[in-house]
Picture 1 (cartoon, helix red, strand yellow):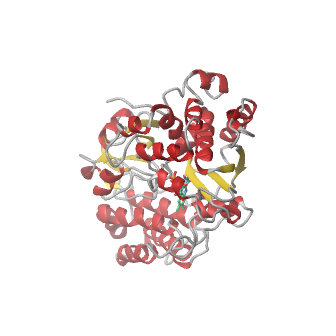
Picture 2 (cartoon, helix red, strand yellow; picture 1 turned 90 degrees about the vertical axis):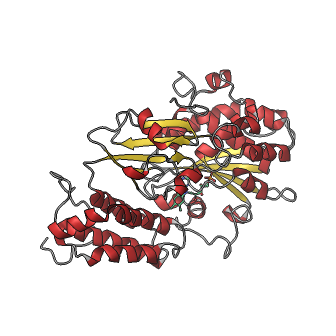
Picture 3 (cartoon, helix red, strand yellow; picture 1 turned 135 degrees about the vertical axis):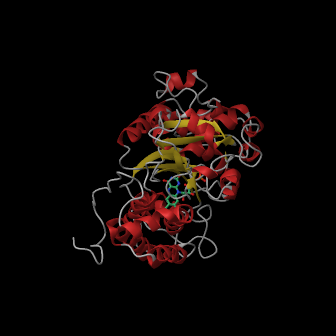
Length: 443
Ligand SMILES: Cc1cc2nc3c(=O)[nH]c(=O)nc-3n(C[C@H](O)[C@H](O)[C@H](O)COP(=O)(O)O)c2cc1C
């Protein structure tokens, strides 16, 4: 079993981050093909490809593009979500670092299709090198006429691209919070339908706004160059194309792997050199927000949106984390809960309070002071956050904990009964910034 590389095919070609080498490997052919078509025909090509957003939710890309107004004043904005805060995910960072022109080209095509004159790439602040590479690519693309006024001589197409660096907040990857942050406001979410407008209707500065993930844009030049049908022939019928998975954890060769959607989960582990340090215990296939899959449920699971859902988890952003049998699942859940408690933006009560409570209860259990009822208390907190928070960060915080308890309840019970890990020799991590002293325990 091999990778099927569409986006990453040339990632190790020396100089591919520069415009000359990128062009010599077919770069900007997709933009030329797009500009030879009517705007609607470009959207139709993306529709034919079946491309779904790679930022996590898997929403059909063409539906968003098609939702922007097609007539009237065209003060539309195009945003690229390069915040990539989901633990376990590091594909967008590599795309921007090694193949920045692919993202610029994809955005230029999207700008043409949606009549957007200005675009922003919202880059996580820590990705200094990726932002530098992107800035260089934007300058080069400007000089060669792929950005700016009357692109490639097209009288009706001007597009400028800007970079905005974030300050490293997970919540700012949520699309409405990202827009608030971009406008200089606090990085908190805004209401979406049915209570508020869709970004394509009213986004940044009240204008229609398209937002897609880095990888989503990077797929677009290939679709325009080779055709939507070519792209749709890869993957499965409902999850077409390829997807980059960021493989980390207990594997021999961690890194980004691009595979056809529908590939068996176990084949991706093999591609990454197999499990090291013990037998496979569990996999988190789509970033820390998605439910954990115990090893016995991994057989037969395919990596596509439907396959993951059928197995009780999600494809998410493709942050594929592998855990061997030396992993303490309760400690893993505690660390996960800590992350969400730290990153909750505080705007809504269920998420602000619930994530902190989950973190505290898990602190108590892993400090050896847990009570048996704490396990059901955790499940009850999950129920009180899930579906009740202002944005999906609350859901994302509750899903892993609920799945951790459902699949590994015996490990939680062991911690409570014995006050120690079920994993022989496991040393609990040093308490870095636990939210509060653990009740009932001498600190
Ligand atoms: C808390 C939270 C964080 C998110 N972080 C990211 C992110 O870092 N990058 C991303 O592309 N999407 C992220 N998303 C999803 C975005 O809201 C949005 O769905 C995505 O950018 C749309 O692009 P796509 O259709 O191309 O996937 C996040 C969502 C939530 C709820």
